[in-house]
Figure 1 (cartoon, rainbow, N blue to C red):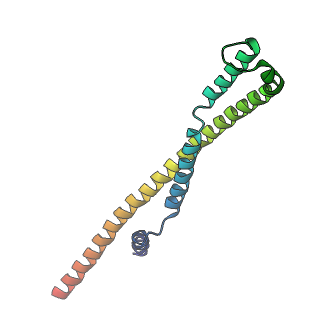
Figure 2: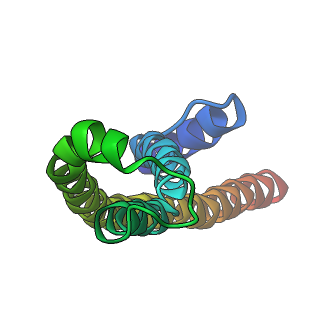
Figure 3: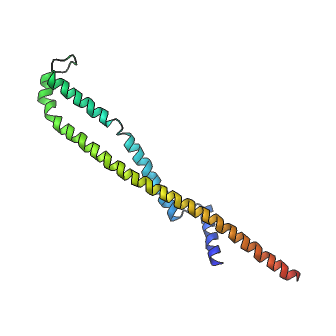
Length: 149
């Protein structure tokens, strides 16, 4: 009977919006997943930007008198010095994004796990609730039979 009372307490807590540990974990990972999805979405065009930058460097180094309208001397003296730094930065971004994507997959897995746990708890509580009401009904019938006898 005490486990039925504990289950009833769970149902009351659920009605008043008090969350279980699994529900709290689910909500926490949901926020992380949403945030990472937004951040990773912002890196979608990184490869295209890096390729465009490489094309600009190649155009100005290989053919400084091109119809692009860029000044060779400005490029060579100012921008040329930064080529390796920018390429290294792009490689760092790519590596970091790759690592974040791996962690993102882990977080999505954790989120799904806690979603499943919260759903399992709710299913179990519905079963326990039904058992509680059946037990109450049985006790009521027995009391009615004893009074009638």
